[in-house]
Length: 288
Ligand SMILES: [Mg+2]
Image 1 (cartoon, rainbow, N blue to C red):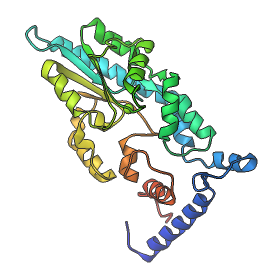
Image 2 (cartoon, rainbow, N blue to C red):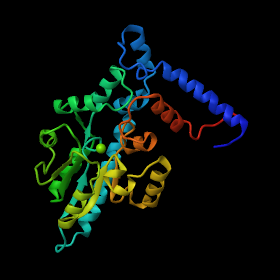
Image 3 (cartoon, rainbow, N blue to C red):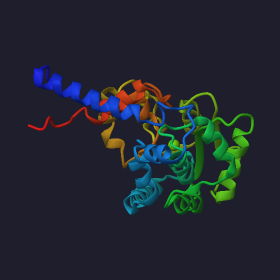
């Protein structure tokens, strides 16, 4: 960022614009009763609108999911062709949320009630209702794995209390996913670190693919602070994407959010809006 006086003035204008917008935000006014025109105005200025509208409507979003699973199948076919009779059995490891299950109605609900950040309490109420939808291409791909005796392991970080595991397993079964049993599902309630599960599966199986919507689904290396640090580690591993790592799109949540705000589920605040504004304008043209 430049240190010129023009740049400083621009930053001041941006901050004033930001503060004016934040003052009208539903989150700054959290705790107040929202009715009528106020709620309508808050809905129009919701910071999540574009990302959620894209998730809800874009054929491109669904096409990206198919693209990921088409590529996964291609990579699996290559692994099957290379498979020797003496090696460990083949396996794929997948995340659940935003990799095989979508939460469209949860995000739509947040928009309806004027929330602009992931809301853990509402998520915990929504999840047991089984309102999820299937990520396009996911079920077909995992059925293909099963048809070829490639085991599927589900590894997720969720915490809805004592019934967390039960909910996750039921969702896999009700959705018709193969290998939906206790030996193929790992749920971490208190950590987003999936390394122990990956290492344990790797002891007994040849892991040919890892599927996720978050780089942390592949390696703990990506759990670093800051946007630039995270990007640098990803660049180091760039050849792995579309090879052993299959990535699904997710513009609403994940550790990319943590890189901006310092936490994956930031609390609505002026500081959070300021961080979001800074992220969106970090490469902004100055207009000249
Ligand atoms: Mg996920």
